[in-house]
Image (cartoon, rainbow, N blue to C red; front, top):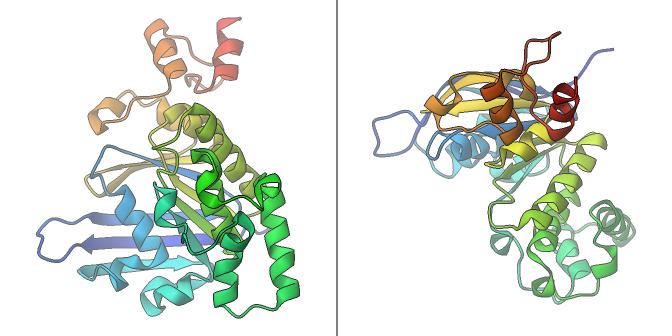
Amino acid sequence: MVVKKTIVVENLKYRYPNTSKLALDSISFSVDEGQFVGIVGKNLAGKSTLCEALVGLVPHFYKGAYGGKVVVDGVEVLNSSIGEMARHIGIVFQNPFTQITAAKLTVYEEIAFGLENLGMDRVEMVKRIDYVLDLLGLYDFKDRNPFELSGGQMQRLAIAGIIAMKPTVIVLDEPTSQLDPQGSEEVFKAVQRLSKEGVTIVMVEQKMEKIAQYADKVMLISEGKMIDFDSPQKLFSREDLENFGVEPPVFTTIAKKLNVKDETTGLYPVTIDEARRLFSL
């Protein structure tokens, strides 16, 4: 079975206008259809810039010096407008307030807003809205004002607006940074469900326990360079993570101090279930 590559990045380099240092430096990787990829690294490592490069904001909006190649869903970013890329890839930012229009009075109407702008047929529009309301657990709130929702619900609404457009890829740039634990869990479960539906997910996140639990692969970025791109178990078992401003999941930290590893793989546990299994042996 041939696995489709929904993202292919080759030797990507980028420098913002009026700066001398590369924000992205020779980054190459690919992502399979339906994969959930987490991106980690300290502040200003280049994580958000990479997200912007995937959706076309770099270089079309921010300009600057650009080199290499980014292909999303078979479309090369450099040769396509931001509007064209929006048909293939959507982005969700940290704060849902930046994406909720405030022009509509209900959750249902808010999701419909983008579809209306496309001039979509009403039958198809209703079908898509009902689908995303169910997918993201928002159906019971469809008649509520968006600003009466909780933080987690608002972020799911922001994601719903993107999903209704049916992109192949969704990029999320620290979507849970302003949410409490319950809101964070709501978002991660919703995104995991999207991944299982076949949507490719790229998420920048600081909550390592969540990334370890949900992501298929994790990318480590430092000073614009991709340091590693591997499974959560392999990446978080690295002994030099602190050099890159990343703390491994708490279960991994404890296991490292006690030198408890999986005898078969030689790797440390990264989730509570893995830790429970190893510590009970």
